[in-house]
Every structure is written in structure tokens, then in C-alpha cells.
Length: 319
Image 1 (cartoon, helix red, strand yellow):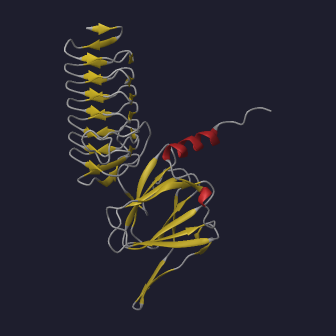
Image 2: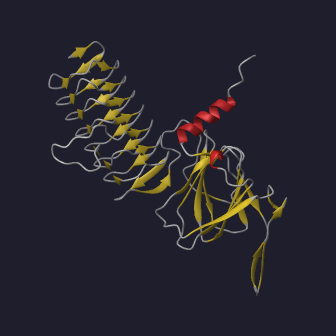
Image 3: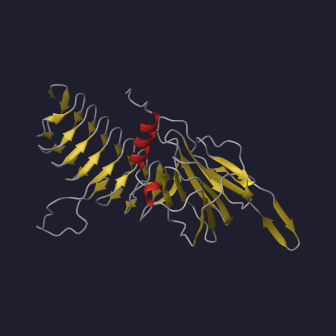
């Protein structure tokens, strides 16, 4: 049957009145009164949606999905069959939380069949959670995670995002880095029988006078570092030993760059989101920074990063 512009199967129980136009609720689905569901959603058989749940537009919930209090699903999300969300980190029978941790699935993300999402996490925009994965930590935007516990295996720029991005790692010496302002800074590698030498000077492989440098080492291959942008600070990343991958993102395009040669540095200007992962066991990352450490220079939330980019593009109001 249809209720207004909402289709409800005769064997479904739709108690909420906050459902957008074009949404379809199929057999044996149960939606509680407090739930809010957007337009053009597909709520498949045997789904259950609790009260404190907000679902955006064009969301697909395949059969066997349960959404509990505290879960927020943004626009264009796909949730595969029997994917399991949780909302209590330490559940006990007949013991109830006063407030549930907020779990957010950002726009365009996909959750694979039988995946399990622990409470209080964020699945970033256009991320992909593999079938059967057990997600114990928040997933960055565009990341593809698999396994138990889930770990990042790549960043997928072709995951449905409305932008031209690269999902294939490009070597640092390749010509096409299209993220705004990001570039290579290559210097000679001098080799003889005594060993190899790589040197950098300001203006010759160092695009700014450094005020700080630091080393990152002994990173487990499953770990991810970075996941932030700087408002003012410039950086040069050099993998002095081993290899690692750096994802650079200007809010429109993002690319994954492989760093595996000490003579090649990756210049990252302000307002570019960076994430480093795929560290080899012996990897040593050397980072030069144009400014001393300032916690206020960091943007650590991706949505805040996008909002700040937009605000910088917006013209100042007329006086």
C-alpha cells in the first residue's frame, strides 16, 4: 500500500510519520515512531529501525539490517545484507545506557554484507567496508577496509565520489600529481663505493626554510598516521628508508603517492589533507615543517576541513 508518496508493503510495520517521498518499506520491516527517514530510500525485508535513528536520502538497507538508537546514516549510503551495528560498548541484559554513543556513516559510504560496526565510530564519506569486516576504529574518508579487525588496504578514489581522483597509487617520480599545490622535490642521489648521499638545501630540494623536522618510524603496517591538514604550515615528506604511501586531498581531488626513494620529497602546502599508511617494517619518514609545532594550526576533522575550504572560497560580504 502507499501512504502519501511512501510505499509500505502490507506485511511491513511503519510507525514513523517522518518518512520522505519515494521511500519504499518492504515486507517484515519494522520502523519505530521516532525514526526519521529521508526521500527515495529502499528499506528491504526484515530490517529494524529504532527510535533515535536518522537516515538521509537515497539510502539502501538490504535485508537483515538493524539500526539501533544513536545511529546516523547520511545520503547515498549502501548497507549490505545482515550488516550489524552496535550501540553499547559493554552490553548487559536489562542494563540500559542513559545516552548511546553516536555512530555516523557519512554520505556515499558502503557497508558490506555481514560487516560489524562497533559503537561510537564514524565511517567516512565514500569509504568502503568489506564484507564480514569487524570495524573497531573510525574509517577515514575514501578508505577501503577489510578483515577482523578491519584495516585499510587502499584509498578508493573511484568509490562513487563526484570528483576526478586517483585510486591507483602513483610513484612519487611520476608526472601526474593533480592535487592542488602538491609537488615533488627531487634532488640527486650521489652513489659511490662508500655508500649513497642525498642532500637538501633551501631552494634546492627544500621549498621553504624549515623551522622543525621530525622522524616517524616503527609504524606497524596496519596503522594509519596523519589524517589532518594544516592551516598555515608547509611540509616536505621524505621516506628516508623503506616505503610508505601518502594520500593527499585538496577537497576536490585526492591521490595516493608512493614514497620509496630518499631523493624524492613530497611537498604538501597548507590546506591539503594528508594520510600516511602502508608503512614497510623498516620505513623511516622524515618530515620538514615550515613552522614550529602549533596545535591550533591543525584541522583534524575532515568535515571541518571541507567547511574551511569552502569558507575560504566564499567572497567576503560587502561592507
